[in-house]
Length: 423
Image (cartoon, one colour):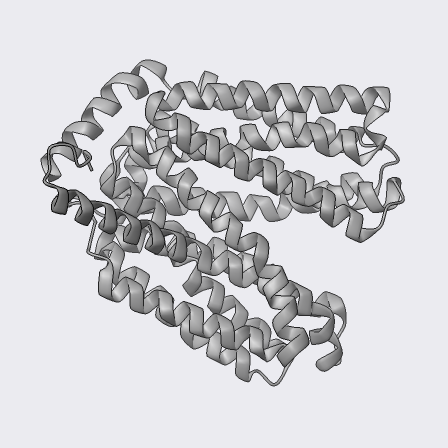
């Protein structure tokens, strides 16, 4: 945790190897649920045809999967605080393996939809527990860089997941996707069982779920950081919801062209995470958040101005400025998440779960609202105005809610003292 300076070469090599294994486990547990989500997307038309249902019914294998992700984070986070990261994570992965087998054996669409919900409920355990583990293992100022590193590596795999799913379906049929997911989730479970130690902090006798929730709700720093992170994430959902209608309907471009342009925003978010990994160890968490907020505001304002003048009726301008927003978004989301789970380290799972639940739950509504704005407008103005409003709301939470003196001095000192007490 404090590096390997002064250690003999063998100890340094062992520490580096352990660090790489831990990174691999964090990436695997974080990515297993979202990668499984996107792998099935190319096969949705085939599922509708196979089971004789409408494509909107087949789409429920995706929409209810997202509901499962949201519910899982709300449930598994507090459980990991009470029973430990390792047993809850293994239980979640076991549920995912069983549900994946159920998906591969499904004979009707309702059976598949139900199995997918359980698959998400188990698989998303890794998303919430990974953030808690990072809080357990690393000091407050290193959390952001570790979150960014995990997300950057995971996104590379996630960007290929739809392609892999399409290839599997074409070559072997849609059930092969679930054979692959079963094998992958089982492999992750085995890796966790063999290599992951328990990282949960020692809890006081008075600690309980009610106590954890009460202390977090009463803490202005937690509320401010959490709202900042959640609002920043809604910019992604808003643009993802309205973007297809703007590009395809308003601009008259093909869906393939939209897919190519949308990939640029994912690449920009990846670049933002890589930059965050580089700069987080050298800068304070609050400074990085404010840098991201300023850049996010500038990109959203520029896109709004282009909408008013009619310039961004071409994809190059719309997505070019959105890329600026996405780079900034990575700085805001990762550092705000680091702040939220650092307020009460022994309740990191509960904090992580609440944040993840709100992010996914509100995101489902915001993406629908974004689709409405994009589909019922003749210009990009309503969508870019909504994104601009979100960027202002995001900055307002940091300015008006987070007590700057407390988070920059007292909380960091307390977190570091607790960290030192564990070593």
